[in-house]
Image (tube, rainbow, N blue to C red; front, side, top):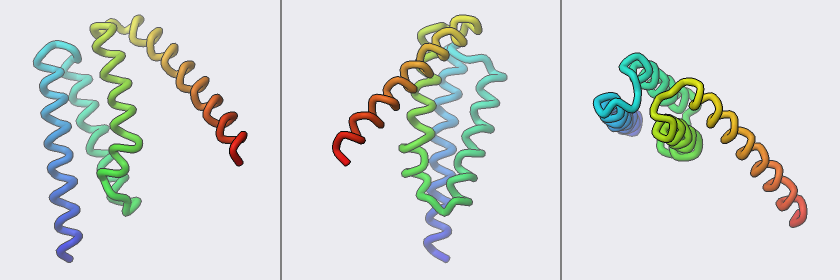
Length: 112
């Protein structure tokens, strides 16, 4: 029971930390309040999924959510919130990531 309470506290502080990041981006004008609200809802969903999978929220966030958020924040920052530019840069980043994944699979295959 104590471990479950510890996990709940960890999930709560994760949500608080991410919320402050989203609020900072909103306050500085990098994202709109509507997008910030959606990002916070998505964050709560990610934490709930990690909880349901009985996976460490830290491992889940560091392995999946944080890299995804970093890419999203990079796209938002570089395009200054312009929708068309975000779609264009986002598509280019997805293509780059797919190419890197293919390279990883090929190189990993050499060592198997």
